[in-house]
Each structure stands twice: as structure tokens, then as C-alpha cells.
Length: 165
Image (cartoon, rainbow, N blue to C red; front, side, top):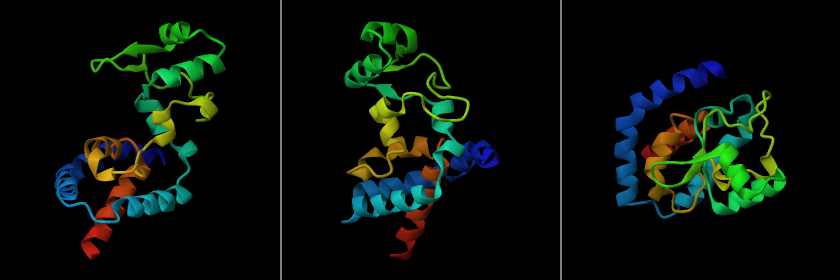
């Protein structure tokens, strides 16, 4: 798995132009059942993918934290929301709360998340390949294929199926 993760940024870079063109076409004329297709691809891939053997998302990127996330997680950690913010978060250039540093402070050595039950919404939805109106998040997906082997495989399968139809 580590070999696949290590090679992922280059593989994503090699596919960048092809993916960009594909997503531009998708945005112009999304297939009628795109969200259903994406849900199926997502489910098929995650039946085969063990995120605990990877956790690259937790090791290399940080999620956005909404106010609801902050309230929920700080309560779980028995901290005041401001204490949680001061200890773990910073405000980024888009004025969003993000982790002060990566890897995520809540990632245990065995790749388990110690706040899994109350994790941020962005974490629970990652890599967003089953999101409604999928064609509207192509920029996010382009970033995620360089981070998540499953997202990379989903996009490749999506392109393969599109060529068949």
C-alpha cells in the first residue's frame, strides 16, 4: 500500500490534463444518472479499500472544521470550544478553521482516528466521490486523486465507463 501511496502524486500529475478535460466535459453535460453512477463506483471501491491501511488523507491534509464540528469535538474532548481552537486549529487564507499541522493530531499510530465518532464532516465525507451534484466538485476531486488511492481508482473507472457508453 505504501508504494501505491508514494507514487500517487506523480500518477495524479500524469493524469491531470486528461482528468481536467474529462471533468470539463462532465460539467458541460453531466450524464443524467451521474450521482447514481458515482454512488455505485464509490460503494464498489470502498468494499475493496481499507482506509486503515492507508490514512494518507489524515497524514497529508487537514479538513475544514465547521462551528458544529468544533462544538461537537470540543464537547467530546471535554474542552471549551475556544480551548479546542487554541490547541488544535488555525484560520487559513480562506478564513476557515483548519488543523494547525498535519498529520492530524487525532490520528493514532495504528491509523485509527481517536475522535472517529465525532470527526469533522469533511472527514466523514472524504473523498467526496459519492456527493450529490458530483460534477460541481471537480476541482476538489482533482486534488483528492493525488491524496486518496480510492479516489484515483474511482475516477479512472468513471472515465473507463464513460468511454464505453
